[in-house]
Length: 202
Image (tube, rainbow, N blue to C red; front, side, top):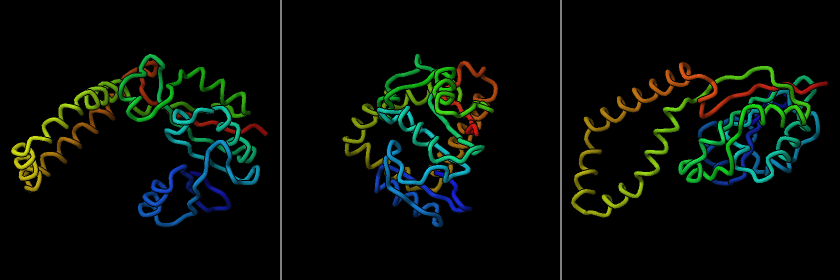
């Protein structure tokens, strides 16, 4: 996602993802493209956002080079990425992550492309990582229960009630608050996702 001439341009590799994005965002320009071959003129964008992108791309440094090439001098890149190689586990494979990054490694990759890191923020902490690993590990168990007709009938009946939906929403808000708190209290070295703002050198 980026800004060019006061317009928002959204890009994705998947046609389905672009359709979903267009329905949710409404306005803007939507482009299906590969991040390693961006169809834009050089120095077109004053801001680029790449959120949870590089870890899915085999040639991630080539994608970074492409991103840098379409940025204006002085333009900024907002980049989020999964942190800590030692955290790579079942949830990463489920999400089709090819890798995780160390902070110094990412900063060096950005610097190589002429992008200077000017800000680093914690996005998610270890609680998110632990929770995702647990959920992914338990999916086969959930699938087993779903095959049981009686279980499915009870589940569908419960979820159709307003009370069950209210409880689910309340639990989701509570968990979101705990994850937010965890991300801010945990030391950066334990963060599962980091955000970097980098500026293209002139």
